[in-house]
Length: 313
Image (cartoon, rainbow, N blue to C red):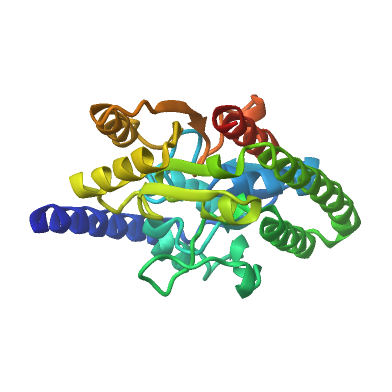
């Protein structure tokens, strides 16, 4: 086990050193807006990119590093990513250590351009703690009232870069806020249709704590807040025991995580004569394919709600 941890640490260190070297080589590149006057924005996650696209409209050109099925906890920047970061006028990322392996890159980039964590302005009392840590849970996009603060950050940052479009950004942001508030109301209404004793959400890792807190679900994850954390047979058995004791009938897989861990839980319950089904695939750390409903924040959120409700009712 110790040898495995050392190997992971060495691999992460080498990747960071390579990234810093690449940054130093590219740091002298000048950035400027697109020829049509749009702001070049590079984001990490699709959730952040969705805010920028909705608030910025045709005044932004957005490049998101992490696409469908990508796990931000383990993501390490490639040489191509470094170029996208260098070419951007502004870099927007989630923060709260979600993109843990990229923090040194963000620190380096902030010397030359706005490099902003959109979750940094969320009030302390809206943030949830991480188990056995002084850090905060980074999965803030699953609590819409909290995520609305990220919308405000994006609006303000774009307005600073393009003050002549400030009024447009404010109008777009207000329209987007109303759309998210409608989804928030929809989520509360739909979760209420699940019998109270069945409001238990079991997933591969603990990405849905904000979702559970906002909408009244008990949340259980096999792994911790980060998929970098390891799990063992004891963790699997503990979750199996809970499923059996409480007669929970469905668990969920995640689009950005292997099904292996959850399948082990399902098989463990089966051995104890308790049938548990896979209730469906949820989008946790990544959204769906671009061009689909699930490839948007609103579509992803509604997909998750409908999948959870249909399996637990």
